[in-house]
Image 1 (cartoon, rainbow, N blue to C red):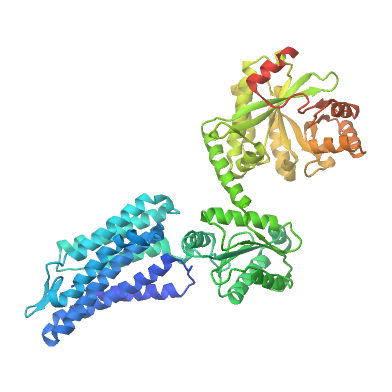
Image 2: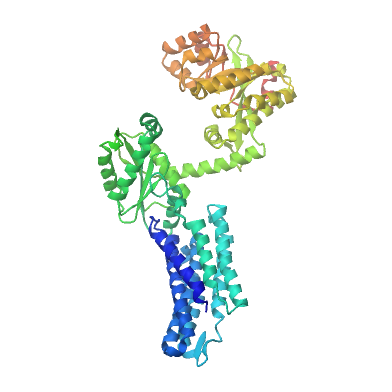
Length: 632
């Protein structure tokens, strides 16, 4: 038995852990439930260790039955603690979802056999016996260690097989290390049986569990005191295997704009007020705060979201008083019904966000349900992201060219370089799908450089005069303007390929013009290098003629929707716009030309260049060269 001196400190530290556990809210998931049982098991084991040690020491003063009872309870607590350490490892990798049938009985069998041997020791002396000489080991004493090593072996097997279930490297190594302490404690006891310090090693394992998994800071949003996104992920991941539950999400509409209007401090105070309200009014639900004014309520007690939504709508009809500032906030709702199939936590959360986005445009305040399309869209996004990353890593982006013709003779004078990527089956992915993802994850910077480099290589390998080209437009994403050395990067590509800057025109969209100061700074740097700029998709977004006059554009491309709208219903807007551009010294390109009538209409309005399927769809570089060599 361990000495009393080693057990008492463990006992005190475990009490401190218990107090800490109950002092903060915990997610109602299996890992937390097992953790509290593990703390209690260690506490009882430490206490029984003290009692059994004293009983064995003073066995002559006590009845044999009492000494047997204390030792049986102590050994049984050891087995329970061993099993709970294994159960915690299993819960980390969701092994508990197999907690039924023959598979479950295989896990429980060592625990059952060990327990039977311990309790039978009163009659059989299997694990220990109490004689006139005091406490002695039984023939099956080592079953305790066999049981422990069995569960540790299974734990390690599960940890490595299901390594992908861990959210971080910290968690993976935490699981490795706390089981390692259990091994070390057992080996130490086997080598030094008179100095049984396994309680100390188990306490160290508990500390590792706390530091790597149970620290409340990992799951708590500091401003609100509610559970955070990590906690929501763990909750959904576990509950999908357990029982039906309802998720109700709501978000503050136009959160960033509202935050700018009211200010950071009042809004943070408002978020805390909302959090306090959720805790007070919905005690049956677990509340989460998931960034940017988004909240989630999770409950297993009701399948109906309507009462929750109605109560929230009623409260948000009144202002939130944040330190003297009345915050008038409107919200939108989304829900995940209990019968919805849960494929993964990430899919569920992103589907909720997508549903909230759709709900934000609704006026009636109804609770939008997560639909299969939300989940399918996110699955598609993940797939495209992986393909995009592989494409960039291996420089597999393909460049297509679409001709631009001049209106005087409808002959090719230039082209636009367009990025194309393929999926694993060789099918093209729409730019509308992969460009936003590339801009979101930062791939667009490298992708843009690869497209420019391949365009330059095409120009070097082909005499542009032979296909009637004077220049090629290359798109520049608004995100790329945030790269400080974009001018130097593009300059290096042009120089490396030995080209004249006049051959490459850089197209930027109106979205890039939202940040005027950044735009001007980058354009000035690149203009000094020799680059020329074209404004793409004018009329699609934020249009401002006065700002255009300050930018060194040589050409304005009219968005196809404006062109189509004019051709279907002629009006004075487009003619006035084109006339204004011409008077400011810009040349004008009309996009989206699909037939001769549209071409004639744009020529009549004074456009300088035309682009569209009427002349050609975008073609691979080799096909483009073959198709337009006749124009030499």
